[in-house]
Image (cartoon, rainbow, N blue to C red; front, side, top):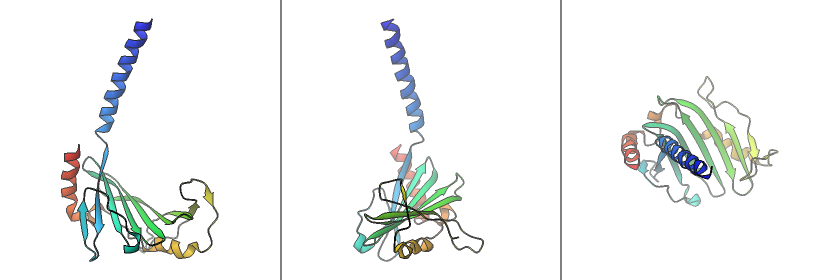
Length: 179
């Protein structure tokens, strides 16, 4: 009986590692684009150092195979940051945008950002949380000033309109060499 158990364990281990290897082929890889002081975008393979006083802005572009799946655009300010998460389908068209504003150490406000028919972000329900928590809180006092930052989020409707879009072929090459 003991031999059957150990043989079964070995078979299960081999099966699970082959399944893991198969799922690992779809592993998401990423490149980063940073905005220079002149407003140009530069691609790199590592996450940039963040300097809130200098207003660091960068995008993390995540790939699965050759398709861009998600882009996180982050903008840092001295006491808060703004993030927009863009999700794309396999043809490169925008599926959804989730925006958030984090006032460091105090709260995070999160909202779905959708374009209205006039091309302007439609008003959205903002959900507030404590940092590092999933527990909702009431709207913090003075949050309106920060939440207005979500109105400034640029909506990239396609992968081709993203920061560093012209450099994405290079990113695909980087992604291919990481596999």
